[in-house]
Length: 161
Image (cartoon, rainbow, N blue to C red):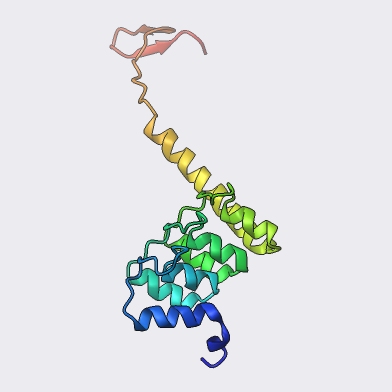
């Protein structure tokens, strides 16, 4: 815990929690909630606790960044995994039009960017499969007598061998 105390985000998070801040309350002028600070600090254990306490994982701060953006900027694959597993919206854009995937690439975290790219592709495939199932119209098939003849015993017989 000594090592964590030198991180300013952990210190801010600790003060917020000690003061009884709500998990979704924007505590500072930048509207960063405790879940933003946990994700931005790469603190998966604090992030998990926040998510279990009902934190809004898609809440955006004044820069339009959600916790997913914060985790991508610091290269925390662990935090990204937690957020994605909790159904964070990976297509949210910040005020500069960047997704978390874009930030991971630009901040030099290709493993995080590839992870988010893979998740996005999987969600797109899943969504298109669901969409095609929802729009499928059942085709009613009708028996046709084309190419067959009734036998005397009532059974059909094909014209072709």
